[in-house]
Image 1 (cartoon, rainbow, N blue to C red):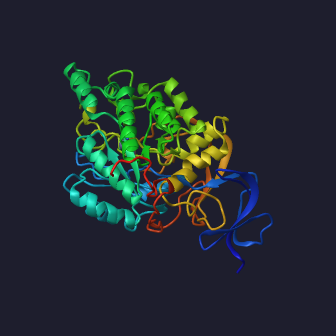
Image 2 (cartoon, protein in one colour):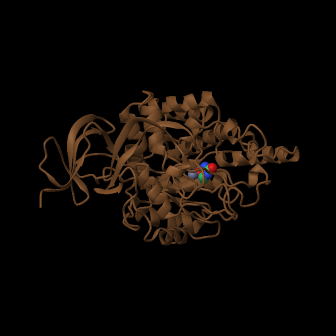
Image 3 (cartoon, rainbow, N blue to C red):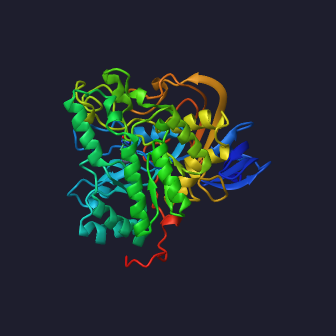
Length: 479
Ligand code: URP
Ligand code: ZN
Ligand code: ZN
């Protein structure tokens, strides 16, 4: 037996800081050596001439999340993680969602049950806090944060999920005291409801009016409010799925004031526009209904700029998988239904990495280092799993993507492994895809087939993220 279980030979290693040629020696699922001319491993993988990046950390995915409205998510922890692995992602963070009236701990326990024996890659949970009762705020949330559930999402829209302003403040205050990272879905609920009622009264019910009902200003207003609340409470926040210029301007302003306000964006805001929801009244546009909605070409450019200039820390998929055909996805309430009844969310866990490497790195829009930072290193840091995850370094888990680059191909849903019957990126021409994905040194995608037994994925108890560590207040407010 040699010193290494696996050696990845002659890799062009990319980290968030560097690019260098090295062999990667792996033992017991971890990287134990980075050097040239390492001794032979029990298994040798030739990466000659290929970029090798850290396995992706997709910190915003929805798998098997109860919706409560009759629609059902198409991917569970098996199909979702297989799909992730085939697209170069080796860690996912889906959401344990509290239903109003439910205990937060029950929501987390229920979600562990849903995950049991299924994941093929490693995973952690964010929580979604929808009912911040005194019991949740004083007991459950602090206890769960201490146990390694160190991030949670709150919503400013959707009746079943949203918190009012006072509840947001109370929840942020607990995050500050306990050192958790708060993700905020920032859209103004009343503006959306008001616009929706008017659109429907005027007979504008087709999927494309989803975009009309959620203009950029509703995102701008809520982002501004969320930032003001975070400033008042003196706590870091991350604004999720940012779609365009107006929210980006709010985030950049906050960052210029020295506030710890982080931004996340997603492929749909680079590659889709409001026209993807349809230019006529066809139901086909339901395939691209997500919130916030995709905007226009100019806003796509703003998002590209934000990826390179530091406005965004995280590039995640927001994989929210609903089938187009069938009784429980986009058509759960019928195909003649008005846009406000159509399940929100689109698939993307498998395509996230390749879309950004092909159209971002290979076109020169972003550097390979930015790619790694956005897809792996930054989310691992923000959610308390770095340096175990998110980098290529001695001691880190051997989560790696070996890239196949240069051959253009047309992306079609048949090549994907999710349980969704479409991809919003059907027919797109790409020039990169993972040739191989390793999760803790084990091949989980070999360029042709997925591997790895269900349940091999390990649950990660996260640390308190560095930016959210409890610290002394800047202001004198008695919080
Ligand atoms: O439309 C979306 N984004 N659906 C997923 C749920 C969420 O708000 O992230
Ligand atoms: Zn959201
Ligand atoms: Zn989401």
